[in-house]
Length: 458
Image 1 (cartoon, rainbow, N blue to C red):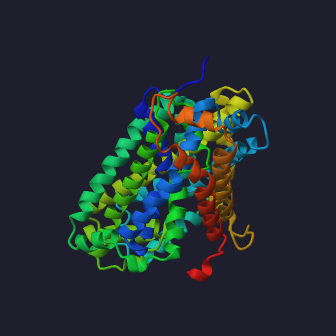
Image 2 (image 1 turned 135 degrees about the horizontal axis):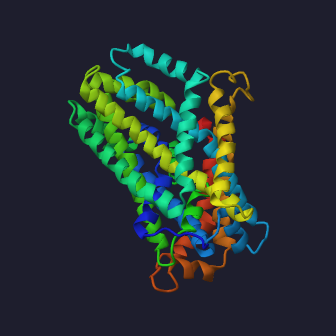
């Protein structure tokens, strides 16, 4: 049986977009934007995507489609088995490693969807939301049950294959994600005081822009697009030869950015509606699972049917965003195992799922029974998060950029992005220039920032 491809260009774009659109779009981008000059941050962010996000994404697409192999196999082929083959293996390991803790947060979105639909936030005092979240994550059983369910859904999709599983799910989930996001945004901007929230998000405030703003925008652009995780390269290996790579990268980036901005339309009008300082809502899990349940209840009426619908839709949106990204991360490892060790998809997926169940459970329990297991004051979950975000991703991205710019055959690169000369590529020289000089420096700065080298600026 031959290797599967995506059945349509739309399916390919939606799958790749699903990989890029994740929790970071919803729980990090809006806060970064609001606190770093609003539209000024968005402008800088888009520039970062153009300057180094698109070149790396295009390169990953190119390598994947040219080889029609898993990420490790793809880099082995294009590097002729040289030491650069390890860049692909690093990508596979990074994607698998991230999934080990990402599934934990995915499980949290399922639990909060359940709490919302059962109206569990009705008449909860504002100070109790932090306790509700803390009691939940420290419980040894409930998060684990949701974790197993979340991983089970991923496993079901992956075992059904590329077209019947990944592509079909992307065609269902990505429109669903967009519709829910649009519905929530419209509802939120209809609230009293919404104009102040939109102004906070979209009004350019260049007085807040400094060197740290640029670093934040660079970091957000890099992590938001799922670069160096093996996802884009793996999914591109299922593209057909007529898929326009550069255009596909632009489309994915546009969808990713649009969802992120719309998430701000959901959050800030609600925050301003209740007179809350947006600088106090927190980030990450603190924003999503502590502040926002309280915000939605106060803004829409404690225990009201509108609050139930809005909150349920929001956490289901988070679940879908987490699921699309998790599926792509699982496929990175599954494609590697099945092709490199000549396994069936079912056996390869089961092996990957088993490792995720074990390590994901350890990460989940690190907030409860295993909270004492720490290294440098970081629990297991935090160690996985730190190692991937601070080291694996920026190092992998830098190596991909250097390889694509300096090592990969220039003729091969031009032939692939032009689809054998059928497409015009006036941007080719600028693309190579960015890969050689701009992108490695930009990612190097992101890496140093993650390591705290620029804390004195903050």
